[in-house]
Image (tube, rainbow, N blue to C red; front, side, top):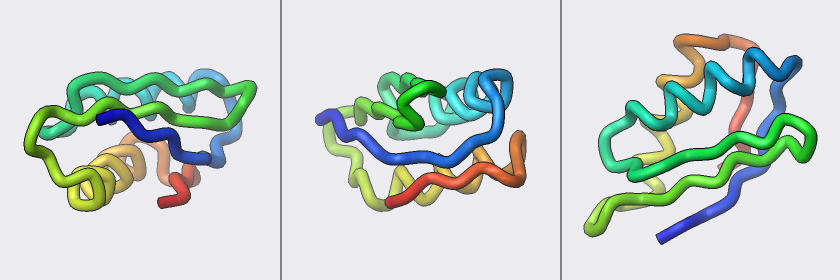
Length: 72
């Protein structure tokens, strides 16, 4: 399953950090952050609960970039 989320991030480097943090989150098969469009596309692993996984993605992104936001 793939979902797209609106994000708020200040720079392309920060967006890249968010993408890497999302990819390392359990339950995420792949993630792509588009800084220009301010969107994050997430592909979930089979059987993963998107709402629960995205809470972890948000938490992991806040660790690497504390002023970022993902609108769930």
